[in-house]
Length: 403
Image 1 (tube, rainbow, N blue to C red):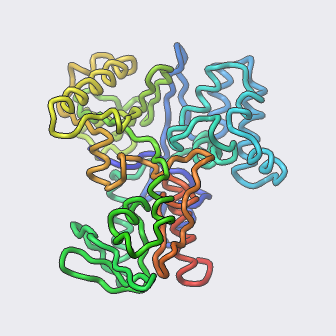
Image 2: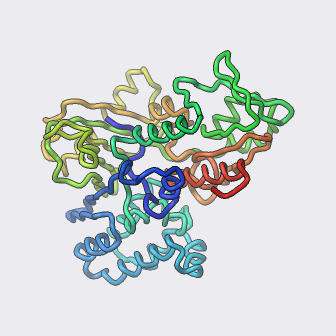
Image 3: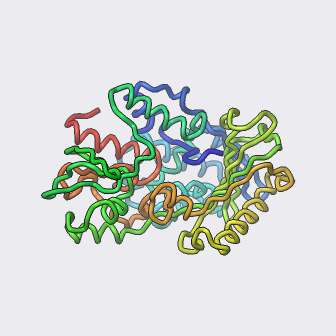
């Protein structure tokens, strides 16, 4: 089983592609283009990761809306690539729901174009239309990519780059304190060892950083209170299955747009055959998880909760994989509390803070000199492409020039 990102945007001409170019890494060594299957009622749509492929599949399924489909995706393409500044201003000025209502009457089409809103953790009437373009709609225009060998392979490549250029990457080295004196950062403490530095980049969630890793007396209370009050983004429940079914004929991404409980499926071994023995399959199912409704770990209630989630997910999965429950060899269930435990992200949030329009995420510079925020905590938001953008912003400020 693999855990982590399974659908990366901006690999060709976006922020992720810029990072690969800067580090002289090859896209084909790290990523493979995802194909997708959407189940909408009795309709099944297969998308190849291109704009024309998306238009063609949707027009076959919704012939009466063909003109609207093409017009909508033409606007998305234009906004995504900065082709029309006036159009970009228009998309920034309205909520995403307004754009959907402008183009479509069909509820199923609106549901389709909201199918990846989970990548933002916000609803269509909560976010500016422009912010949805790169985070969600770009997947229908330029595609999304799966990390070859699983997400760990990408992390390993980045680690190798750091070490090859004189850096050190430490694992199993949990930071216990960010050392601060006279409103300046001094370094970090790991157990009894302190690493001195005039620059520290907080890649951990800002709420964890300022409420757990820095003594309260070292930071202005109003700032800490503002960070602590920020709402967290959505979390997930994840069911992972190893099966002796050969599913290699299917796309790697499958989404059943059920209005009651949407389930997102990734056949990891279809994106990368090395992830399962030949003739078998490794599958990840994702559905929304509520941290506050999840019982405490290591309790009977928690085990029942996991079992109920697994049953629900596998029941829905049999709409696409008939007989799956009789062909499971290995299985695992993760909850929001699992994500919290392994990532130190409060409430197991997968995109750090809530990504709605009303959430004022912190600036990447903090009141402590030399202490920066990166990752998904800043105004760039959550998701790989946004986090890469936040990393560039932080790095360029530190070195003093554009990278």
